[in-house]
Amino acid sequence: MTKNVVERIDDLVKIKTILVSVSDKSGLGAFIPGLLGINPDITILSTGGTYSKIKEILGPDAQNSLKQVSDYTGQPETQGGLVKTLDFKIYLGLLTETYNPAHQDDLKRTHALPIDMVVVNLYPFAQTIARKNITVENARGNIDIGGPTMIRAAAKNFIRVAPVVDPKSYDSILAVLKAKEGALGLKDRYSLASKAFEHTARYDRAIADYLAGFSKKDVQSCYKTGE
Image (cartoon, rainbow, N blue to C red):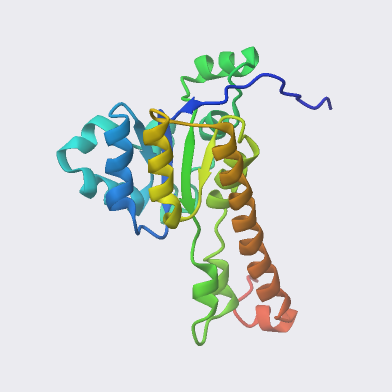
């Protein structure tokens, strides 16, 4: 397999399409209107409870900017929301490179948008396992799959995409966007990518440490097995 080597990029990338899916919704009330205040033409893709929260924040203006991920991909969420963002159209949008003609052809073929920013924070695994009487099954249900995958894809493609994992960074991101007329520079995206990989590393470490603390017998006690 040949590795794809990128030699040409844009320093400044204007934020036109963002995907927002967060467990911690703090700060969205200022961040989302702030983004649209800088660029009213931004398209926001979102899911589940985050979509509902942003719709509430934007009110009547939501119809101009906000779109369900399921409407964008053409695939409904599975029951219980287990599969929401794991879709080719999403990851093409995250991983596509500006000066790669094959990628641009794929975008046209699938009617996909290049996604410029991902705003994601993960299921509260550490908070869940800190509670009393939590079973392995309770913990398993709070292992996020789509979130880390989106974060990693966006962080890998820092040459074009900005991964945002911490609500505390919203104000500084808005300040940079205002100063750069709605764009983020390579240094900005690279810094965010470093923080994103640190975020997913801590998340995976918490899961690994938790699962290592249980024996096979402990796990089997959570379930009935089929005959």
